[in-house]
Length: 274
Image (cartoon, rainbow, N blue to C red; front, side):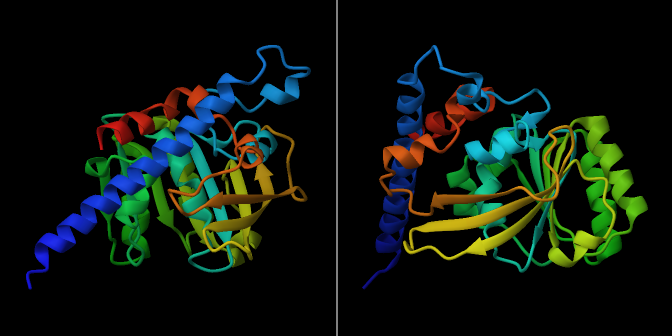
């Protein structure tokens, strides 16, 4: 029995199901935004529908409001995790995809952890514009990060960053500011006690979920430049891991209407072409 045709057919079916799930979720968000009253009772209801020019919405309304607009463009954004596989990157991948604009690249710089291509595609990335860099040691990683941030060819730079001195971090911060690149560094929780010039610093704690199709995180805001959030504020995030999961209206209303943001309109177009 020849397995190749069966495998290819299964792959096409999975691709179409993922595309359908992404399109269904985005259309639901568009419908939510369309039916929202154009005359809100107060400013808080629209505070997170649009991000400032130097921010990219995370897609979680409460988190975006606490951060004053989302992740910072032209700056370092740090996520402190207790262990690898916490789910923090999974939650933020759609935001990183919105930060990337053609013909710019996503540079993923890590010697041990490579991204899962279907997850990147589902988040909205064009895989042909993903640059994977696998440095041999910490010195090569620091050099690669500096080069990617200074090149001007990358809208987004992602790395798992364990040990790096304060001087090197400040050099990377300056490079991100110069080119307007969004740098997202995932770091061990032990780095929380070390100094950092990051504009946004989040501490993530995985939470149990009763539904295996969904994932939950608790995000504590350790630092957010310019927002007033510092140290104590924490927010629980929840999202679906199943592209065909039918989200209820309350769940949708808790998320930012991403389609209103200029960098969030490409995903449904790509899904329709799938």
